[in-house]
Length: 283
Image (cartoon, rainbow, N blue to C red; front, top):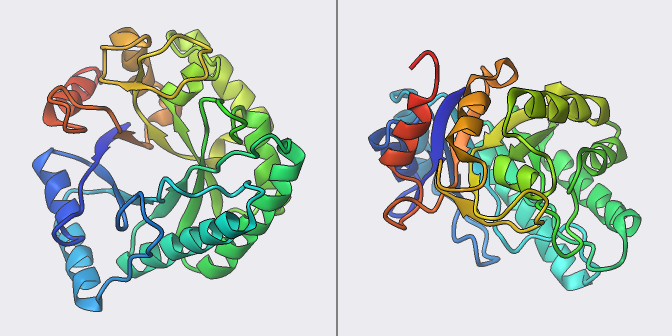
């Protein structure tokens, strides 16, 4: 596994590269604009070019845009749904302009309408963004959820159903979050636990769909259905689990992005990155 972090991109999108390099990242994730507003980010071409040039000159192997928090691709609220689809498409446009590898998105909640009703909405939304992506190399990664409040993607069967809904399109991939998996009931604390989870993933979605890991400890217990990230080694998963995760052969060529609160409360930091890297047997 090569290790990175969610970084800030304020002050110019190329700052995401600079901030990642400062932390010693091999991979970065960032928001294209404010994560709590609908306004799409449209980059000036000179700024996008500066990002591309900075990345080319850096050790960053993988870059991904995280879509805004407001998105709900399964909502029954028509206005909110249209805004969500538009935001997803805008993220794909930004990714193509910047030359990043993928966008990763939370799917949202069916809000009591049931999974099948939510699936119909998700199918349409994914169809829209795939039409936008076209033949570019940008991939659309669906993120699993901890399972609270009717959220979609709480297990691999649900994620597989969403992939199947668009004909198994190869441009759809997966981002799995270790905290979300644990909170949803997937124990990851031993090699055997991880192998069982991967077997279930392979059966429902195919291991080839897995492109990105969010590497976060969990403040809440196994099966809590609560999404509460903790710093590496400070949560219910613990250091032994992350030693197994970063050294598992299935993850050897995947980026692992930290989304932890940080030991100083300011988000992913050098201490978390160095701690995670120290657990690798090749460190």
